[in-house]
Image (cartoon, rainbow, N blue to C red; front, side, top):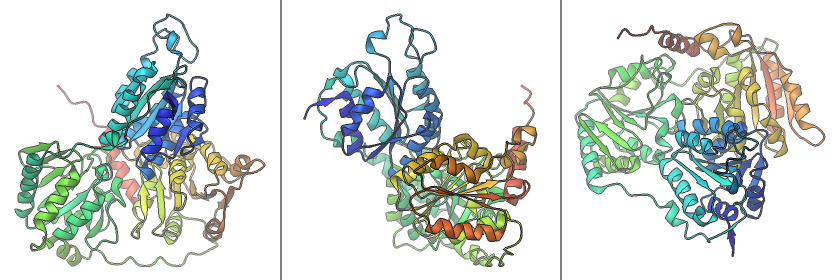
Length: 566
C-alpha cells in the first residue's frame, strides 16, 4: 500500500485508537481532509467552529484516551488553541492538526490570506509550542513520518496535547509507509533503582503515621493509576478522599471512600477527618487557588507525601524518572498482608461519617422549581453507565453532591475553567461512548458561548440529556464579584432545539418551571431516542448551593489581596 502524508497521519491515528476525528474545513486543510476520508477506520465528525472542535476532541480524549482535531491555518487554529490550552491544563492528549500555506510561500515574502499580514508564517508554530508538549511543521513529505511519530509519541507519553502543521500542497504528497506502531506506543520504564528508593521512602512515611489518609487528585487518570490506587486502598485500609476535580476517579462505593476534600465545600465530616489525620498521601493532586479555596485548605508540609504523575516528594527527598502507577503498585506489594492502617476509617465512623443521607421529602409538584429538586432529580437517574459533565459554576457543587454507583463517571474542567467548555466536550465524549447515559449540567451563561454544538449532537443522533439551569446570569461570578456584567440576555432555550432540528433533526427541547414539570420532562428524556434532550430549568437567580457561596467568598478574598510591598 502506498501512503501520502495525509493517509500516513490517518493510519497512525487509527492505530492509536482514534476512530473519530473532529474537523472544521478551510482552504488550507481541504486536501488533508480528503486524505483522511480514504481511511475507512476513521470517521470525520464536523463541528460548528474551531473552538468547539478543539473542545470536542478534548472530550473525546476523556473517553478514549486520545483525541484529534483538524482545522485550517491561523483563523481556525488560533481559535482551537484555546481548547488546546485547556487540554494541556487538564492533562489530556489531544492532537491538533492544522493545514498551512503552500510550502513554496514560506520565506518567499508573499502576503497570504488567513494570516496576520506579514510573510512570517511561523508565528502559529511558535504559539503552539507554548501550549503543547510537541509542535512540528511539515513542509516536506520526506520528513513527515518522523515528525508525525514524534508528536504523537510525545503526546501519549506526556498526556499533553501536541500540534502538527502540514502545508496544504504537502498533505497529498507520497511518503514512506509507517513502521510498527509499537515504536510510537512504547513508553520508557521506571528507573529500577529510583523506584525501589521511592517505594521505600513513601512506605517509611506511611509506617511512621498512626492515622494516614489518601487524597486522590485529577492527574490520577493521566498517570494510568486509577485501578492501582484501589489496590493500595485495599492494602492499607485507610480513608480515601478525592479532590473535587477527581470526583469518580476513585470508586465511591469502595468501603474506604469518605467523599470530597474541598474546604468548606467538602463532603460531611471529611475536613474533620483530615484535621484529625497525621499523614496525607497525596496521589496526583493539583493544588491551585480554586482547589484550595483561595489557599485556605492547602495540604503541605512534613505531614504530606506528594506523589505526582512524574515526581514524588516525601520529606527532604525527591524522586523522578518513575511512573506513579509503579510506585503505587510497589507500595501495595509492600503493605500486602500487613496490619491495616485503618485508624481514620474507625474515626470517620465514630464521628458519624458515612451515614446514609435522609431521602429527600416528596416535592410539591405544583411548587416553583428549585435547585435542590434539580439535583435530586439528576441523582435519581444516575446508573453505573452514567457520565455527568459539570460545567464551570454552581454545577460543580451540585454534581459534587451526587452519590455515584460504581462505574459512574464525572467530568469537570477545573484547572482551565473555560465556561462553555462542557457543551462541545460532552459532544466529543458521546461520540466515543454513545452507549453511556451522558448527562450535562450547564448554566445559561455558559451555554450561550458554545450552544451551536447541540446542533452537531442532533446531526449525529446523540441522546445526551442537557439540564440547562436558567437563572439569569453567571451565578459563579455573582458569588465572587457581582456587577451588571454578570447578566446575560435571556434566550428561549427550549425552542432553540427546534431551530437546530430544521427539517430532519430529532432533538427535543422542554421547559420546566415547577417540580412537576421537571419530573415529566425527565420521563420524556429517558424514553426519547435519536437525538438530544434539552430541559430548560428555570430557577431564581439566588437559588444556589451554600458551598458556592462560601467558596466564592474565599476566592474573592484571594483575588482582592492588595499588592505586597517590596
